[in-house]
Image (cartoon, rainbow, N blue to C red; front, top):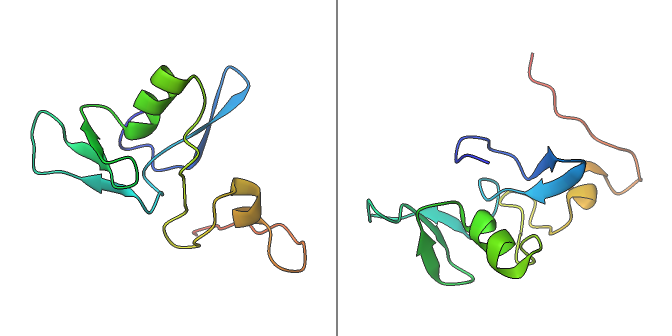
Length: 91
């Protein structure tokens, strides 16, 4: 997972992985050695915080909260109140 992947979910060996770029708690730091940070866990890293969490805890980050939608579940992000799945397409 790179900083430019931009997504919340990424498939890796048939397992969904979270990404930081759409998380409300992710930020870019001033520090060149540790350019990425997480405001919830209060740490800076040379890698995306979700990668560090996966390495240390062995599971995806539980603090993820979508920046724009304010929700924590990817399925909730793609389903509206009527239960219809939404797909964003840019033409």
